[in-house]
Length: 157
Image (cartoon, rainbow, N blue to C red; front, top):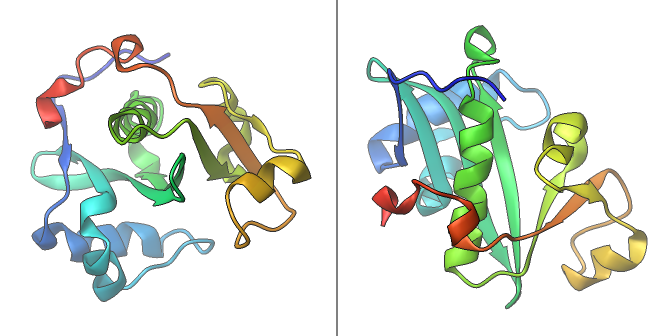
């Protein structure tokens, strides 16, 4: 895992962050969102910030009573390899754990990267646990770890 850069900060997103999050997501053709779409779900987002500029984002939504979905994981291409994506995944796990989710699902766009965090390809039977909106395709599932296994994240709560 990459060494963390102390010039990178992480925090919950605010409404002011909706336009820059939308711009960052617009660079990813699989996941473009408008500022209005981001604003509607702003409580789901965490951002990574360098010198006042949003350089990474992740969102966590809840599916049913025991599951979460991690989505919108993006890092500015110029800053890949600096641990930003890893920290954002840890934040997603922490958010899911605080809500008492047992499993977390993610689209398989970053399959090799996410497997480092315990994500595995979802069997079609597993997808049914998450509800009807998850169809066969490239989905990954992981168990949500206990908060003690994710040190240093309590600053957000």
